[in-house]
Length: 375
Ligand code: SF4
Ligand code: SF4
Image (cartoon, rainbow, N blue to C red; front, side):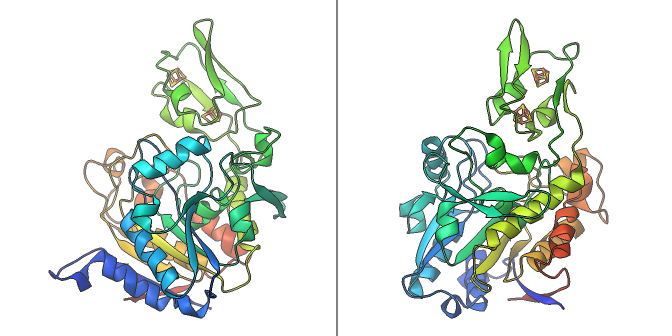
């Protein structure tokens, strides 16, 4: 059965507010009928990504404000949230630097897994993951709005709502310090990867050390060592190394993509049906995740905002839209020789984000058939 995906274009051909992207978001909110599923006084996490010190292309606070105000207008209590990536105190400061604070968005801005990233509840997941530690403020909430900046991702190929929930709905840390009991569990779904470094090729530029989220890489005796216990196999070091000197023994891509679907499904299993809606922002579609230390130029022009109650449908519609767009000059897509008519994001990154959308459909999370409705 086909699901409806509503779409507000980024094009603003008329000089009036009604043609703006902000007004388009307001029309999408009307279509998502907040009053029909948000109860009086109900806490409503608005799950987004706060970015990083160098990744500024997050969903803008202006849009978060419109969503928060709409929740308040129907009697709900919005909370803009993300989960810990770097340490919690600094991550809240990153949010502030990117304009995501109470003054801008009009509601509390919180870390759903607490300031230390350890507040979580273990939830059963599918056979690849077994279980996921869901961030407590998401677990305890009864309604949620998933706001995703849609772009590339180093391991997933495409990062939208599924990745936002799977990675971002899981707690960043575990009290034991064991990364396998927190978000890193998803990265290492196949459990077999090992970082290998070729000292002959390495120029000691230290880019890998600076990009590592777990501080697993350190200098020693004029070279580098990788602490395998700390490493959660995210692949960042491999991606940034200009010399090809650091590699992960290849994990099963299928397992990782299925892990994403299972992780998102586990997070959603803590909500009753009809209590979660999705807003996908296909704006500033850059090739990297918002947790990388920088944001490259977009690979396609701004498309607009998509909204739906079906996570698979909204993801399929978004990826289709990005992949069918015209690749932009001065972007990674141009660097990689991607031409119009090719699947832009997939070809530019060389990783097929379609796989985790297929996996989500396969485990019954929604419909890949959709009807796109302009609003
Ligand atoms: S894969 Fe590389 S960047 Fe990622 S945690 Fe391991 S050492 Fe750090
Ligand atoms: S990024 Fe590559 S070349 Fe630079 S220090 Fe790391 S392994 Fe060596």
